[in-house]
Length: 81
Image 1 (cartoon, one colour):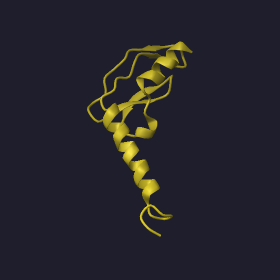
Image 2 (image 1 turned 30 degrees about the horizontal axis):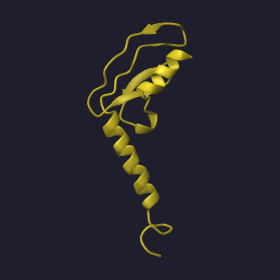
Image 3 (image 1 turned 90 degrees about the horizontal axis):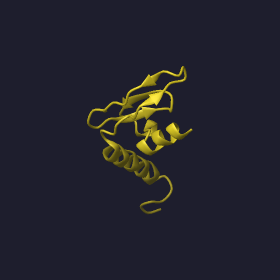
């Protein structure tokens, strides 16, 4: 089979490309304030360059894993609910 056929590796390459693009776009994204499961308030904070806000509605931290990315839109959704 030609390029892009079964076993060519294109699905993996596409996944990696999307992950890298997401990390570049979201680099330095701020973690907004949040309330943890105990009801304690935590102020917002900035992430370093090439890191972004990760975690859940109740626990946030900076990381480099695009699969753990918590966008500002998702963070605002947490605040609404």
